[in-house]
Length: 237
Image (cartoon, rainbow, N blue to C red; front, side, top):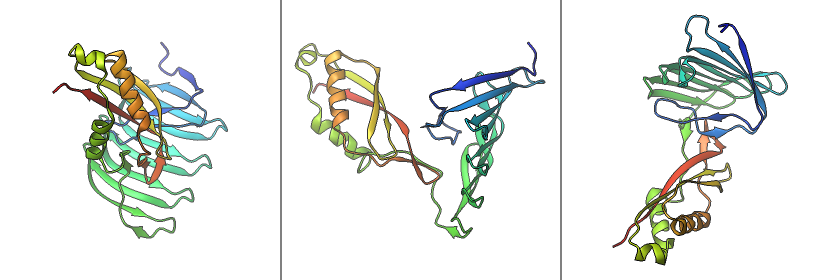
């Protein structure tokens, strides 16, 4: 295969970034339609550079992978606003944040300057649009049930009703659901990812739908759509 071959990918439903250990990207869905050009590395057969563009043709982000198949980031991750101003620059080594994490306001002013070592946060500063130092806030804040995890466990315990048939059959375990928390804090896009028993899955879904609004996840201080995986346990006394 020609190592300089360009592969054009059209992403009609947006692009997904994944949050994981050593990777500071939040789990968000970009609702803007984009298209991506993949340039294979002429030296490293597993490597690639990906250029994602807005429909307008403006470059949206540039990503470097030492292993594209396993999604191992190496080098700079750069993202731009649609107005052409740079949005963020993140240094990666072996898929871990290592070096600087810089973000910018739309007017081009530096918003944050963080330092990481092998995926661990070391130090950082945040700034307002005028360039003045402001109290530090985390780059990523995960969504949270009102009152925190203990409150969520209590909510589930107070509302879950053990279905009669599985109870008589002595069935125990977990129904595992994945859902999204919208920027407004609403629980949406609920999906069963591990079934226990149809009646127990249905009961877990009923209670998830009863949940109040969450505190939304934040990316660089701004609310974003984030995904959350929740195991709902059924245990007999």
